[in-house]
Amino acid sequence: MSNETESAPAGSNSPVKPSASRPLRVWPAVFLVVLMIVARFVPAYLEGGLAKYWMVAMMGPMLCCLLLLIWWLAASRATWKERVLGFLGLIAVFALTLALVEPLMRGPGTIYVTLPMGLTAFVIGATWFKKRRPLARTSATLLLAAAGLGFSVLLRNDGMNGEYQLTLHWRWAPTAEAQVLAARAKSSAAPKPNVPSNETNLPLATPEWPGFRGADRSGNYPGPMIATNWTEHPPKQLWKVPVGPGWSSFAVAGNLLFTQEQRGPMEAVVCYDAETDREIWNHQYEARLEDPMGGPGPRATPTLAHGGLFVVGATGMFLRLNPATGAVVWQKKLKEVASREAPMWGFAGSPLVIGSNVIAWAGGKDGKGLLAFDAETGALRWSAATGDHTYASPQMNTIAGEELVLMLSNDGLVLVEPATGKVRLNYEWKFSGYRALQPRVAGDDTVVLGTPMNVGTRAIRISNANGELKAEELWTSRNLKTDFSDLVTYQGYIYGNDAGILTCLDLKTGDRMWKGGRYGKGQLLLLENSGLLLVAAEDGQVHLVRADPKEFVEVDSFKALAGKTWNHPVIVGDKLYVRNSQEAVAFQLSTAKHAESTRKL
Image 1 (cartoon, one colour):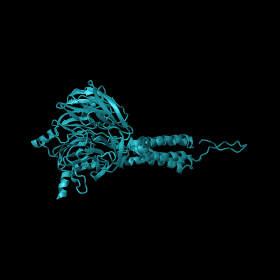
Image 2 (image 1 turned 90 degrees about the vertical axis):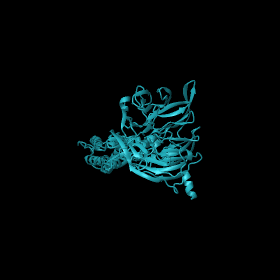
Image 3 (image 1 turned 30 degrees about the vertical axis):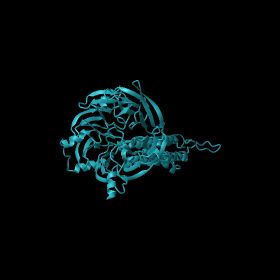
Image 4 (image 1 turned 60 degrees about the horizontal axis):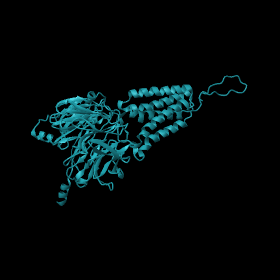
């Protein structure tokens, strides 16, 4: 032990003097630091990457940090005074660091950066000064630990990417959001109010892309075939505009483009001119979700229906706006209606309008999971029980001959009647984590359910026996772990991102047909008439891939955006609209017919 005494000469009555300079035993600590580095970085290079081994990458370093503290207190050979001084010193410096760091550096930043760097610096100090006297070596070791822990004070966390890696910048560097706000503050051009007219009312009554993932939320573009040779017929950029952060997609009606953004302390619903990028109007209200993983900003996509624009904000503000002017028709607070706080990463479900009801997920207790409001007045009409945690949206599909609302949550899949809220089927498939995917209905009775992490994808068959709906599991496959990247189906096959790699499964069996193309946590559109997948990859690159179960074939690609891109792309006619948390851009795509006519000239 560290308080062992030196042996006195035989026959001597001299008191025994404590050893003041016994070297520290550091090899266990060095081993733990190496193990911590391996646990943090090696999983990214394994099959499935951090999406599969995120628990190892996150909890491995934390466990090593805990073991390093145990080493110091029990196996370092430090004197007891050193142990107490070193332990209390680490706690004090760590507490001071947490008080000084940028708020979003807490949580994942603490796990991934602050503690590992601080404890690694502590071990370096203990190793370097292991033969010094106790006070000197402990003081020097604590100074190095303070430098390691304190380095986090210089950093800012702008969220995590799809591989659960922090996006770090120097704390003093301006954020993309701050640059957008500064540019808008300097601009003298205020949005010109839009006056309702026949030119706007007509497309608003029949929007081409009414909301999240299209009319039926399937991510299917049924428009004309597009030219696939982007080298000869490259997408033409029409405009690019800086936007505030958020993971909202677009709703499109004529030349009106609707989305949601974060602008400082305000959430904003914004209407842009789809042809010129001019901001026509914006409606702002005070709300901001601070999220160290996803970053700030609204998650849901506006919904156009019955001449109204229905919007859910990240903190639960639920509004109906006049889509021509941005004026508020009515507003509700989902947290108050459902008597709950916002989920960890905010309210993300896009509203669903069916008949005279507008349906939103809230996840409250006492049956207030799925809520239906009168679309004209905002009065609550019915509610139905669901799980309390999801980032999916309600959707309408015809299953087993009935039109039903589907809602996927942490408890499983619920099917309810849209007019009354009566639960027709509660398919239990509990998951302690999060679900953020749309169920995909294939044919008349098959539903494909995606679940993140290492759980995978399941197909179930819904049957109607004497008016009672029943579900049976067809298969469950870990070959497609889509996390929060939605999947599509085409001609009997499923296409989606398995831990960031595009994958094709047989819809009947769940067997994997192929796997190829690293697109991160990007989003897919099925170009049905072209037999193609349009992939908006996480790095902002847009790819065309053949929807062919025989083999993976990437047709072409081009760079569309800079920065992390999780937002769903939209195609209307020959226009492609993509955005992320920094910018939005519009492209004109050549159609196959136009490309053929050009080739003949």
